[in-house]
Image (tube, rainbow, N blue to C red):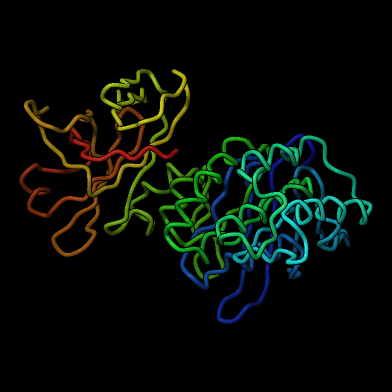
Length: 369
């Protein structure tokens, strides 16, 4: 990897009981990249090795054409010399400083290390403050902030360091459901705005579905799969496509919006999807929706006289028993991927098999915005 390929290359081996982290990663140079997997699979260890907080042996880390570690060449940059920002589960702000003081501290820290700011590596501090809704909090002290507000300050502080790479270690884990819901829209705004890669650790599939453009699935310290979130979430051989929480993501273009009915229409490879939306957006905007497998039913003929708005033609690409009496069916809807979780009786009655043409009835569509 070189300057012409501004992504992330990492080969890391690190002994950690009860597993050994042993990964070889080639990741894109922008977007939210989710490190996903069960607790104890090596997600945080991988982040810490990338940051130089723990040293992999052997190790190789290159980000945006810059080499941070190359054991073969004798190269090792300590953490403070790596152009990165790190957001932990706890905000860990300086209590004696205001919000403004905490954010500006990061800039001063970069200057004191002699590392020059990276032009265009991240949003400007003023823009980060605006994106994270901090303008009215700048003179407050951390003790007066909610958990969600403190995490927003921690993210702004990380961005103030002008990083080439932003690392986020389960930033919502310490928040209750209300605070998570408060913070997610700000993370989505960053996802649309940042020109740098964000490695986002989580074991919450709903967070990953809303934020990730790329996923790395870890299992016992090793990469089980890596690729676009849309592809991995629909793969029947992976645990992402198992159980009641299985879902897929479809990206489309806003083609219509009915303000009276609060209904937006997205055009995608397989046709159109209608989704409830109270927000008027510019036509042509790219949007993502999440469709849960349990909300998709199958029929051999297009139905009429139904309250279901979204019925799309599809072809069965695979199926797998999901639990006793339940099967997961993978579908191709004009290039878009869907999952349907149906009963064994329905599989038999409809003759579900790879290559079977049918219609997918989507009872629920969630706009990821």
